[in-house]
Length: 79
Image (cartoon, rainbow, N blue to C red; front, side, top):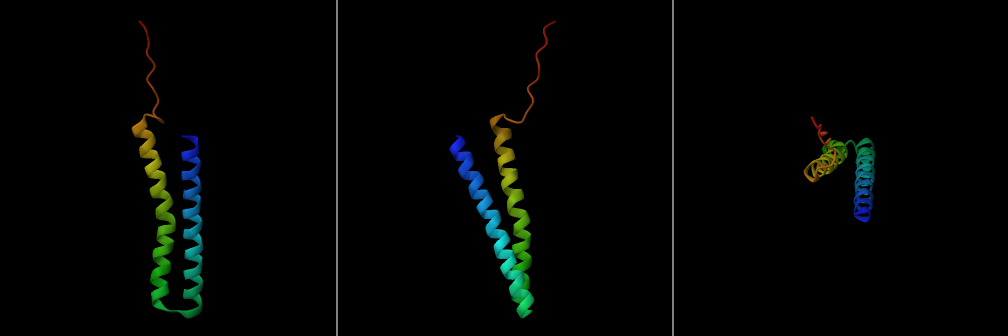
């Protein structure tokens, strides 16, 4: 299970790095050409740069909730 978590963490970091690079490239293309197509693509890429990591975090959070992790267990008191 630890190997799976490591692989998923590396994939997540890779996706975030790719999003940053693509956003940077389209930002540079829009800045140099002033083409409206690059502006639209840049805005979509910048939006996805924030949306994708949040989506991945929510998926991990829901997975942990469904597996019972992250939930405090109620203490049993004996009377």
